[in-house]
Amino acid sequence: MFRVLSASLFALGLLAGGPVLAAEETYLLKVYQSKKGDKQDVEKTDQGTNKIIVNVNGTNNNQEVLTGDKEVYTEEILEKKEGDKRPTKLTRKYKIAEKTEKGNTSKTVYSGETVLIEKKGKEFEFSMDGKVLTKEEAPSLFKSFNKSDDEPSDQDMLPTEAIKVGGTWKVPAEKSEKMFKTLGKDEMKIDVKKSSIEGKLLKAYKKDGAQFGVLELTITVLVLEIDLGGMFAPTKAGSKIVVSGTIDTCIDGTVNFEEAKKVVTIAMTAELPNGGSITIDGESKGVDKKNATKK
Image 1: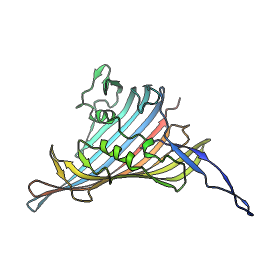
Image 2: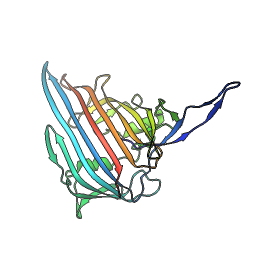
Image 3: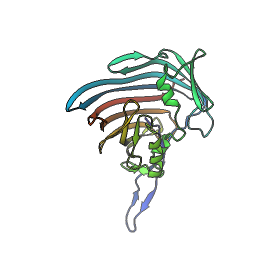
Image 4: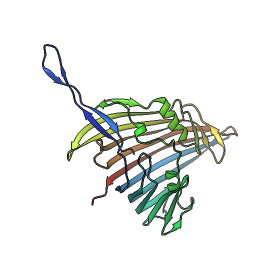
C-alpha cells in the first residue's frame, strides 16, 4: 500500500526535585525514495465479492460478482530523475498476472513476459519485445501509470510532524481535497470536503539494525454519484467506500520492504431515472508485498 520511514527523536526530561525520566520516543515518518537501479520483488493479491441489487418497479434482481487480481513480478528502475514521484523508464518481469471478473479468471497478455514501461511525452507506453501494447490489452497498466500529476504520493498520506507510538493524524483538508479530486473521476463523483484520510502509528521496532514500524491507514470516500453505463446517477446519503489496512515497513529509509494488508468495503445506493435503484455492497481483501531483490 505505502512505503514509509521515520527518523527517531529521543529526549530526556528532568522534573524539579525528582528523578531523570525518558520522554516517549517519536518518529518523523517519511517515504522511501526509489532511485535508478532499484530492483524489487512484488506480490499483490486481491479477492472480493460485490453484491448488486437492482430494484425496478418493486422487483429486485440480485447478483453476486466475484472479483480479484494477482500479480507477481520483479521490477527494475532504469531511469528516474531526482525529485520525480515516479520513474520514467522501468521493466517488470511478470511471473503471474491474472484477473478475475464476474467469477472468471484469465491471464493477461503479459503474464510470464517482461514489459518495458517508458514515459513518452505526457503518457507511459508499454511494450513487449518491441511490440507496443494497446489499452485494451493492458488496461491495468494504463490505469496504474497514466495518472494525474496531482495523484497522491505515499508522503502525502503521512504527518508532517514526528509522532509517538499510538499517535494519530489526519491529512489536512487542503491536501486531501486535492487528492480526492483525482480519484475515480471517470467512475464516480466524490464529496472531496467530507472524505478523509486518517492514520495511526501502531508499533515501532528494530530489525537487523534498521527501524521498522506498523502503520494503520483509513481512507473514507463519500460518493455523490456513480457512473451507470455513461450516465451519472446520484447516490443516497451515506454511500461510501472505505479502504482500511496496516503497513509493516522499514521506517528509517534504509531497507526497501513493505507488507500491507487491506480491506475495501463498498456500501452505495444510487437512484435510477425510472424511479428504481441500484445497491452495491461489497468487500475485498488484499495483501501487497514489496522487498528489495536479493543480489
